Image 1 (tube, rainbow, N blue to C red):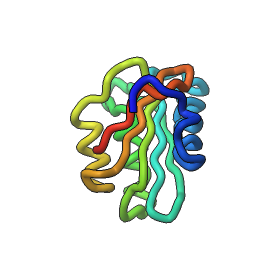
Image 2 (tube, rainbow, N blue to C red):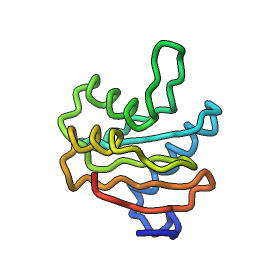
Image 3 (spheres, helix red, strand yellow):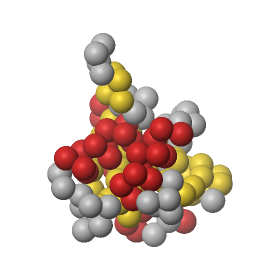
Image 4 (cartoon, rainbow, N blue to C red):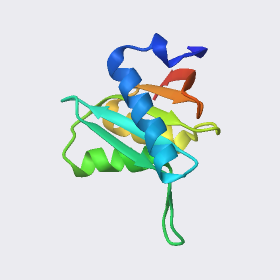
Amino acid sequence: MTDSSALDLDPEDRKIVTLARSARARNGVPEGAAVRDETGRTYVAGTVGLDSLKLSALRTAVAMAVASGAKSLEAAAVVTEADLPAEDLAAVRDLGGPGTPVHLAAPDGTLRETRPA
């Protein structure tokens, strides 16, 4: 999917795009991300930019899911102006598998693309 609305997504995927967008705006960070685990629980994070620790929003959300006991991921969403680095997709793939959809949205919520982890 490219250049379409997040409204084209199913309601659960729209929810994680909205949560990611909210995290980005609320925290004033470059990225917001949300992931949904196998039970439907969501984990939301923003970019971590400490002097001693730098994490993308997506890697932070995946780490939160793992730390909370998630066994797999159903989907992920990232709201950013940048492209996704391979390391972010690898983190989703490690927990969710290679077919886990990763929705990349612009800051206004416009879906830029969906790709498999």
